[in-house]
Length: 266
Image (cartoon, rainbow, N blue to C red; front, top):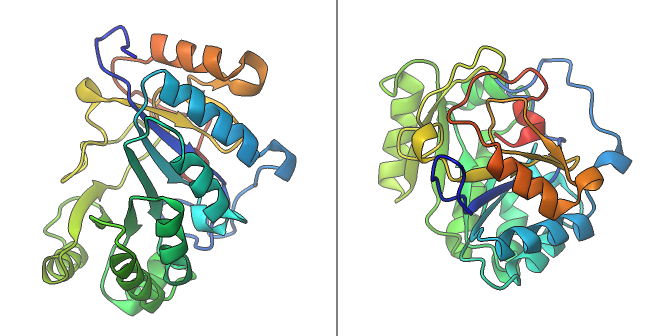
């Protein structure tokens, strides 16, 4: 699939839930958020159906996101079903790692290729402040479990405010270097003001080369994170929604006033 700017669209990010077991300060307000009703959330059958159509149209890379995808009940079963789709070459997941210690091996056995794990500091107290709920030791155990399961390469997503020279960012970079992990610095973003930049060590935010579509947990295909454009797969059908998203993918991101990171998938 090619959009009108001749960008090859071969990457689908799938948000499987808007729920999360953390309350990171840059993602959610302290008192939480209004969650989608359970009946609004896509079923596994719907997600697999959309994934098959997307792969048939040229998508060969899928990433599972959330919220926190590992809080979705029976997530390993969904991974197994998607992994079996013929033509899928790159299958990953972005997670905060809290539940990964128990699920890394089952996910690998189900066919997941690799994981990105969020880690913004090496200081346990700072981690607790940033996430409001998290225990950093759970993340370390999750990283080790992912290594043992072969979910490689493991990429660490580190959110920064202004520069990768910040103390927390440098401590995470040192940890990655010592533990054979790849680091990606993600500048803190704002959907409403359109404040974003290219991910250091990754491709996110690089509009001129953007190759992705996003599927929200409640069934909207979005051609751009920083835009309000969305197509409802339940109303249009998956094939038509994907087609319209590709045809109307904007040249670059602007602003998003109708979504949040926790329910689009970042």
